[in-house]
Length: 167
Image 1 (cartoon, rainbow, N blue to C red):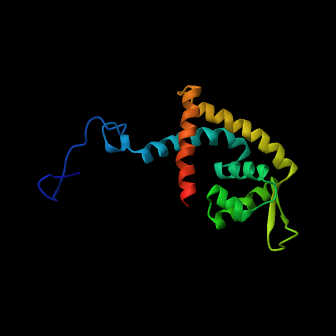
Image 2: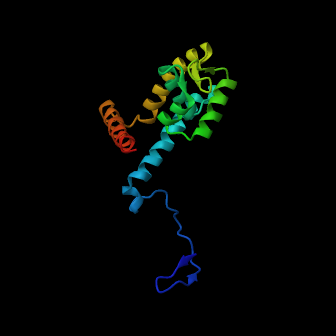
Image 3: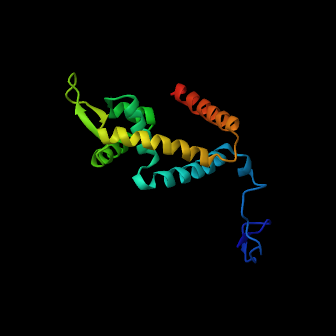
């Protein structure tokens, strides 16, 4: 179906023999948000394939790496650093605990707060996962030279770092 140019009436039309396969020539082709989303889908596809054996999702991997870097981090601070809603971070940490990768330890100074630490299993797995993530990134960006890959990463960090400063 198509909308006629003369008004709002709808008329029956035959579909094109050749279905479109890209957004070439459309305004989306030049939209940063669209390009970022498509790139994210491609990167996550490779990431998910690499992590499939361990059943680790991107947010879980990011959490493991941050917890490794900041042992004892509170879930509130972890949520802020990763820009994840607090209710979602609780579920994420629960999942990591169920897998035996992380644990909550009550803070001595504030008994209401818990620090999050990696378990021994979590430490060992995080090391493996970081290598898999690196290989996944390389595979996802195989059409780029190493210089282009570093430049892309630098530009993306510049965009989100500026947004973080404004908040």
